[in-house]
Length: 100
Image (cartoon, rainbow, N blue to C red; front, side):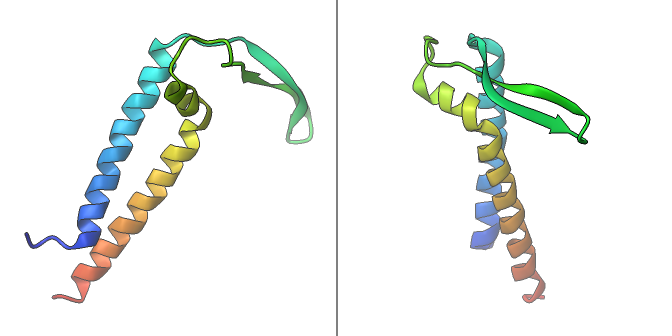
């Protein structure tokens, strides 16, 4: 196996990210949603358009706990995997450049 460790980590990370996108889609499109409740915070865009912020109340939903975590923090997890994939890909290319 001639591939270096960075390239292997890169392929694993991109594969996990792809699988995680499917999990996010599954949770968001096939599982029930809870009611939207106001948080009491105002969100303003461009100092003109202000509206109250709402979040989904998942306490009473009959879905697995992992699905609630994915629904609540899925974007952060996906973004972290994207940055890891970029980091591993950049290091794998850097390792190959000095071998030539």
